[in-house]
Image (cartoon, rainbow, N blue to C red; front, side, top):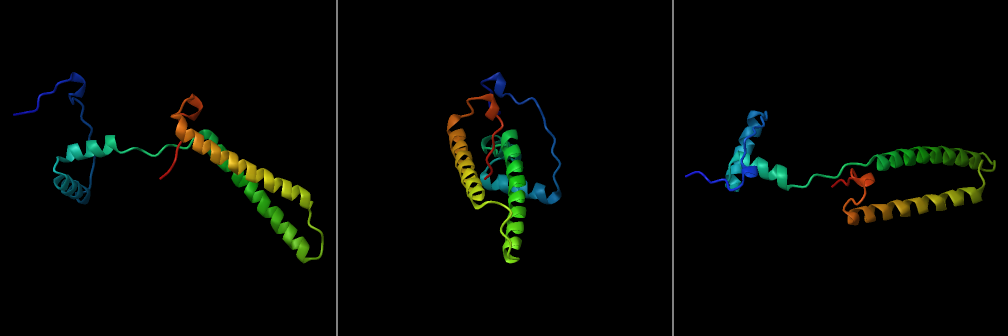
Amino acid sequence: MPKRIKFKANYRTHSYSLRLSDLELEWLHMKAKDAGMSGADLIRRLTFTKPLPKRISKISLTTYQELGRIGNNLNQLTRVANTAIKMGYPPPAKQELLEELLELLHECRRQLAQVDIDDEDDDLESEDFSDDWETD
């Protein structure tokens, strides 16, 4: 006897086609048999119950790219400074400025780490963070 649908919203009227190789289809049937359900139920359960990783926000991506540029510039400056020191010349940058830059970068890192912690707790209160991500 077929199951009775209690709510019309739960009645499945739409179909979605999916192409699988022979190996994938065999694997699907084995997994479904091991789970004691049909292939469709297995796909439905895996699709709708497993959380997806969060996406990268535009702010995070831009920040990451900018920090990459800063890192490249610092590597170039370090290379020039080391070469100058090896040749007996003073470094091209003042030591105090480099230490100040280092402290600013550490502060930036601390702030970014704090933002990541706060965002996980906020449950996306503002629209600006609606596309935050975190990879597994």
